[in-house]
Image (cartoon, rainbow, N blue to C red; front, side, top):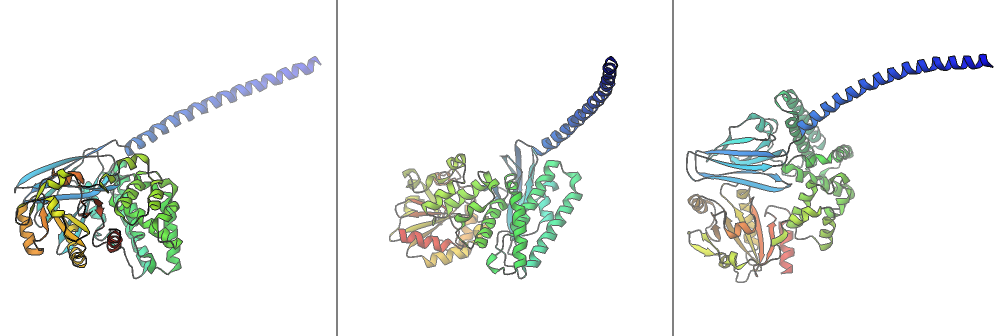
Length: 475
């Protein structure tokens, strides 16, 4: 028995020695692993820091070779945003500084040979500068090529028009080919960009591609293979839907409505509100969806109370509080009604007299400017509407041009002087009350000076007549 005990002790001693060796080996491996993890963590933190930014300070410089107003458009907090810089003298330089919280795509518009030209500029560095030269025949970008990369990659000027492709299969293939080509180009050029900048460009290209893909008239698509292809891309978009929160771009809101249109098409339910539940849940309670729904609520006067209640469930309370619905249903103050603006003969006229009617039920106000290309494109449809509703609606056009002489000359050439007015003062009570930051902007009032809509549909919109008729019936 003693011998057996001795053998057991010896065996245990041998096992302990083996265990000690194993333990030392384990500790050594653990030390190596921890060091590797530390290095990996450092690398991960380095990448995350490269992709993280607190604020972007944008300075826009414009050299005016002619007098006029330069404007840029985008989304900020996923709501329409426009800012302009005026040059009242030739050969002067003007600047404007804006603070942003994420990469932002700005767009400028110009008429070239009678056609609209869209130019895009990406702001994605902490202290970016966009530099332009302003001339009567359009603006020229003269700044850093990095910020103008999208102009090299995308030449499309009809990104907001619903497409009706003759061949849907070819349309999808063509879009995918262009998208892949653009990705290859920016990958080759990636050495010139930081990780943060490179990511911002890729994000925009992806959003742009998806938006174009779903920006079609689905009622014209009968090919089941095309629908299956769109289904595949719809799933891809949903899996990466939070891309909409990573940068400011007009296409963000456009993509949301196009996805809703596609869901409506698939469900055979054309009431978009009923299809909100089918959007990817990752999008709920985000800035992207907030901005879209708030604009929807404010602009669509045909929505029922139930529709609005449903939409509010998808909007964060903080965004609801900031919503610009404060003017709706309110009567214009005496301060605004008694304030004056100039008519076509440059005489001072009180806004109360301008909005007063004899027999009309409503007053529709068009806020525009001679330098605003989208505004000018609305003129033909405005004239059609004016003729159609002349006995029921009073049509008023108010320009925000700084150059009164240029405005007067424009009126004599293109539009009748009647019912045209101008506000050249950006601090005017009327401008400040409605927080005018982008045009064209259409305001609708009843004959009691109550605000029915502070951002009504454009005359070119498909729902313009439907909404007007519904409101006329109510009034």
